[in-house]
Length: 504
Image (tube, rainbow, N blue to C red; front, top):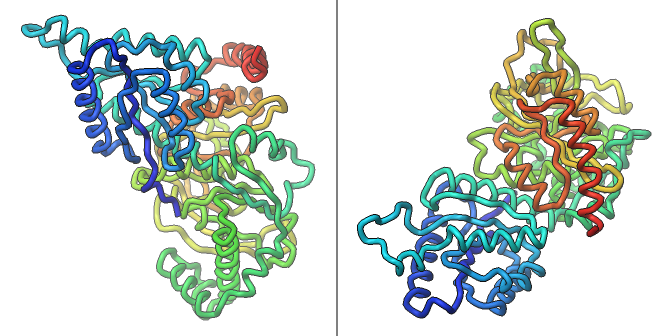
């Protein structure tokens, strides 16, 4: 469902007419070689397209205008091969709407000690050319990513890959439609928010629909389609005895398949990339969608429970960032659910009523049906599994009233200390960094939600890049976090974002 095959990052190189035709020809040759090398890198998931060596204000403005209007262009990587007087860039940078990465590199890796002359020095002067470029962006308060190092280094290519994945997510935000079936869970605060401001800030739209819109699609589902999907369930998961052919709850599985087909049809037909539901607004749906939501998330859809549209949108963006890395782990809707407090160590058990994405399962999930004590509907079908140990992040996007805030906690998932035979939901146990005491205190001080996006692949660096592109606040809770410093940062940010967002 996620297609990035046509997405491009443009490689734009700065110089000036001062150096003469021969030097500028060399600049172009070197730039094309770098672009070709980056495009071939396995670490960069999108096309790197060499655009031009820009040498005048008009050329710079034109390439920025072209980038803005090109749907396939999702960002620009800029490099100053020579000295490019930065006043030339003011007009272009002023109108540029696409994310920008400043690559601080040079064509040659090493100094050619025996042969280097002033011609070589004048050709390879990015060491100060990029500083001039950096000044004008800082003077203009232009948010960007800076990557330093030789373009052939794996470390540099990995950083460019991270940034390009983030701009894929940002590009998704510009086109994303979020469908809400029902409203927020009644009286809940953190899942509310300003949908108009979100569309202004991020680009995505959020609109409400009734559960009847799903049931209309369910009514179109044929028996053959249902049988085919049930067969897929049987092949993909370990079915509980009651759900197998002839089992007492087989019809619940059939109904779950019908709900998935109807929900999927609605999302595809409407061009939605993310959605929410809530157990309080199920209408004529016979079950709260469980396995349907889990499988849709595994296919790349964003989801938020109880009407949580911010988490749904964020999950979709992070799913797009995650594309092509599925062999390294997945990304899922998550909720901090309960604690394991001991004198030795404290942990968080993350879960939800039903909806944890199977992309983070550590083994073949079990397909089961169990009672759900809220909602007043039939017992829903869900996938039950544990989650693999390893490093991960929890990310929460919240509306602070005058700005959006992105909160990230670095965590390490661990194996449960014992089996959980009576817990009928997917779950993951994690150790918060630096520890639960500080992490939970900081999270609560920051106003972080109980719903998050949990990712085994994406790191804090992705979230930092995303926050810079979006122009939103980022608070990180990691090994270095102390409560005193965290409070100071929150207080400082109140002033900074007031000034930044109001142009003071």
